[in-house]
Image 1 (tube, rainbow, N blue to C red):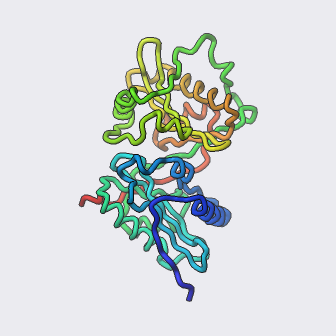
Image 2: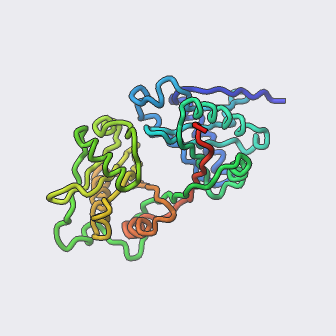
Image 3: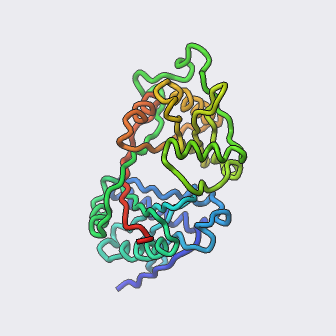
Length: 305
């Protein structure tokens, strides 16, 4: 019988990422699933500046004969919520590998007293959903991953040049550290997020993760964040304050963000949106984004209970 080696690490290194991506490729070829692993972001995030990292364990592995056959990671960039996601090689299923990895990660989450623990799973993964049911996890929400398509392939798509008959009402301004309180207020008003926001804006910018304030001439009405990893871009943290929604400002801000990425030569652009947010879905589709996959988030018991 093959001997399984389980171990944990504080953070990922280049060889770890290569092994994880090789395992992901094997799993996706077999099942065509989407795995939200956040490897690029983890590699670019400074653990030493986040109290949740430090010497804590975030990466959990299972190898046999030197080959990675199971992986689970904890994702947290600040705040009291943790996301857990992972995978097991198709040939090594039904050997309790993921159960053991989850046990190690769950113990770590309890130690760090996370108040919210979410397990992330592709909506099409029968084995993943079966595991979630087996531990009594409850569905919390689902998100579509959306990818920007080539405009010529989209009937009725409006290019940025065609959208405005006059100058746009909004502009984007890079957030700096002195804007941290403003960013926090927008996070609370738009997303209900409180507590530690993680890195300051200028620290994020050093890692190609830039937050922009969405501005009218007289006030700030929202924010949007853009990330760049090689030739790939990601839009996140996009919110318009409630009093300014439904006025076209969101579409103007998103198109302004896409223009910035276009000027950098970034064409492969993705984002995530809650499945139930119909208004946002229509906005993103009008700007050329199309649904690629659906990811379920399941909540397990609080580490404080």
